[in-house]
Structures are given as C-alpha cells and as structure tokens.
Length: 300
Image (cartoon, rainbow, N blue to C red; front, side, top):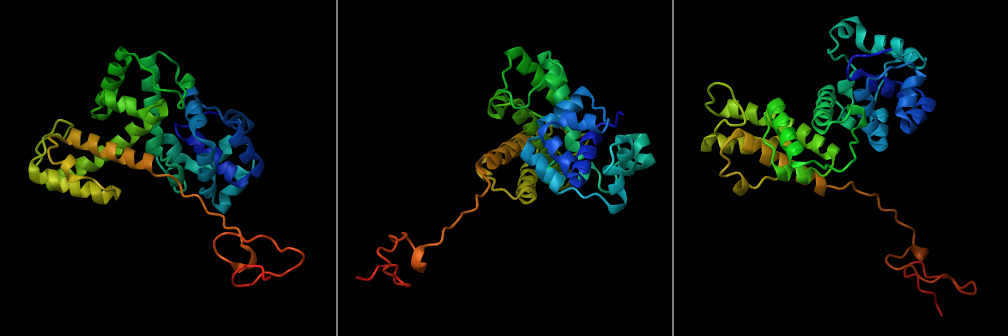
C-alpha cells in the first residue's frame, strides 16, 4: 500500500524498534524491508530512505518509542494497520498532520517531517537540473556540475528558499548530500534570522534575502544567532553584513565549519597495569619473584 509522503520511513523505523529480525533486514536492505510488510514507496522516497546512513538509522530506531497499545500492529506484517495506528484517520486525510510519536519524534537522527520534505524537494530539484530520475541520484556522489547546471541549481534554490548561494558554497559542499545538508541548515538559519530581524528591527513589508539590516538590527541579530546556535561567531566577520541574505549565508557557513571540525569523542580503553603502577607497564615477573605493589619494580 502507498502512504503519505514522509510516513514510509516512520512506519519502517517503528516496526524495527519492536521487531529485532525486521530491524536487521531494514539495516541491510531498505527496499526489501518495505516489501516484507507490503509498503509501497515512491521512487523518490525509496531513494531518500536508502540515503540514511546505517549508523544514523540505528540511532533513530533506538530512540523511537511505540506505545504499548500500538505494538501489536507493528509486530504484524500489514503496513496498512501500522499506518492506521500511527496517523489516525484525520491525519491520514490531510496527509500532513503530525501526531504524537510521529515523524517529528525522530529528533535523534534529525529526520523531522519538515527536514524530510526539504530533502525530497531538493532531490527532485537536483534530478531535474541534472537530467536524472530522483531514484538514481546518489547522495554520496561527488557534486560534479557543469557551469550551466550550477547556475540553474543556484537559481532554483534561490527561487524556492530565498537563499543566496555562491560557486564557493557548491565547491565546499563536496557531495550531493553535502549540498542538501547545507540547504537544510540555511533554511533553518533563514527562519531564525528573519524572526530576529522582525523582532529587533523596523522592518516594513516583506522580509527577503535582499532586505537591508541597519547597524543596530545587525548587532541584535548577530547576538541572537550566537545564543540560538551556541556557536562562536566573530563580530569582525559580520560587522559589514549588508542584508538578511548575507547574514544567513555567513551564519550557515560558520555552522557548517563548526560541524566539520567536531568529531565524536572516542572512549579511551585503559588497560590495568601490573603492580598497580602508573605509566609504563613493568616487565613481567621472572622466576616467580614478586613485584613491589607500589612501584612495580622487581626486588633483587
């Protein structure tokens, strides 16, 4: 059966959270997992689901909660029953309403309903510009565009999201997925910048990327972005920002730079040392002679 956009992954993840065997299948083959429960995915949705890294998908599954009263449906094999308990009739009719425990609950993996919609739109946009089918676009592939394609893609993104992209932004993105991530972050930053500018500035009429920020508004927006994203921003880089669009671009660049510099902490495995010593491990005992408990030095 077909489902409203964005709810295919929700159903798959919820079933995986209560069914260990299905979880292994989903991590290994997303399409086969969907077929197992007779879930029909559009080519675009199948491509998006396939693009979710296995490690991130595991985190999403681990953080997903299925209410006790819904578990029976998800332990079965009928996607229709799973959709019914997930969305409810009203949400199913409008195809967009978010319900408790719905797609927005997958915060650990960053796959909110709005994020999913952005990725879907980007995938279709990129496919149209490059002459591909959405299902054939590889998120991990290198971003290789002709000058004409790059110009069309920047224009499409600007028209759709009111963002300012440069050729340098395309180069820095590196991959198709990297550019999609840049657009997602920029859309979020744009919302925050616009909200701050309207609150702090005397903005008349529609606020767009070309809206001029006066010095006082610029300072307040800069302050709000530091608080909102909890990131160091150098005022010298923002002192001369003329427009809302340029503010969005610079904040986004700083956030992307921060994310690239951050690496997950690796746990340090400490091995016990002989004799309770600290530092270098002493040589093992020879001929049964004991080590000193404090120093680890074999007595003569």
